[in-house]
Image (cartoon, rainbow, N blue to C red; front, top):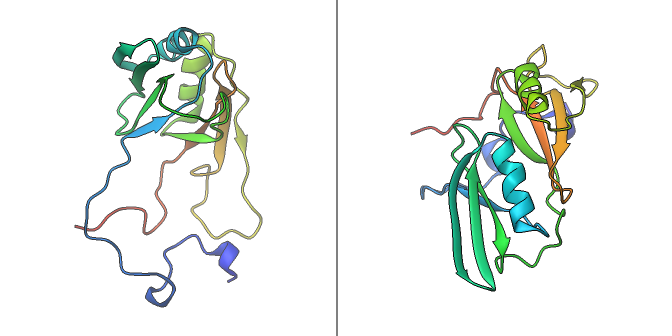
Length: 160
């Protein structure tokens, strides 16, 4: 099997020792050009609104969290130098991509059709898990991918 086909865990000779320090990715910054427009868009998705903190005319932070996610998004003024729309391919994992897509469409969001793309020769679970995807973008062009995962690949959970 070539390294491009290896979707499992690497052997110990190929990796360094795992850290014992817990770290959680909790917030991802999105670059936007119009904070209020972005706020309306993310509210329309049905995500939990966490905060709209105005510190000054030059600094404002708005935060939303997708349903049941451990990671939130933030956008605003004064927090990132990235160009609006430069966040690409942010992945939202869902158990039922058709239901997730239908929910977004019912909220007026333009979402691509669901595509199932399985790389040839890839040894992985049968079905659509990991391979069914649909996409949408926010008003600035930051892009999101819905990815259906119903069965996790080996090695995708942390051992205690």
